[in-house]
Image 1: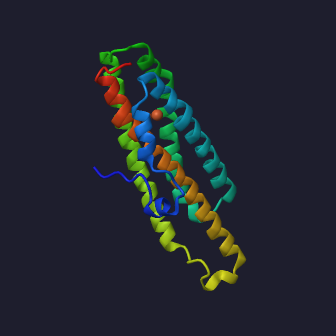
Image 2: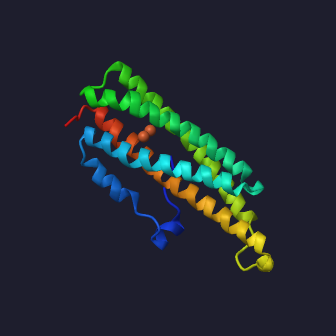
Image 3: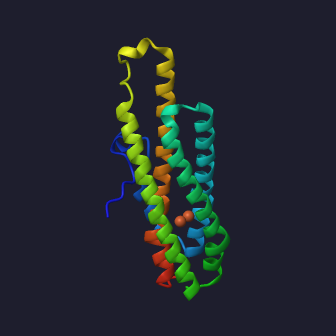
Length: 191
Ligand SMILES: [Fe+2]
Ligand SMILES: [Fe+2]
């Protein structure tokens, strides 16, 4: 399955770090260190990012962002419940039990299914952002003299950039859990 983690233009401009670099460091951690890392980096920062984006969307109140905002709020609701489930139920059990129990295996499967749901909403968000970008006037276009339109376009771009940066973090986060943490735990390589 192809999973977009980064936009090519962001990589070339040096706006984002290569997630594989972070992933290689992550692989060297113990399961407990990984749990700690995920909670204190991704969960923490993504919750903050989501609150900022929610506030920005509300503050802008632009009709052009209505549909994108709804899809973003859908993703936010999924993620908030998912992070709570990981932090309050699954991660504490993984911390305590060195070997995965039957209950834990079921829970890990549920989390992985939820990741697929999140990816579906992320794809929708990405598509909506692409369509919105296509509908925006190019910078320095004919309506450059129209101040209101320019302010709106800048705000719309800012809103989408914030969402994109959240999506990059979520992709790395899902990759760490699905491809490193859960397999390592299930293989019983608890160090
Ligand atoms: Fe997580
Ligand atoms: Fe997760």
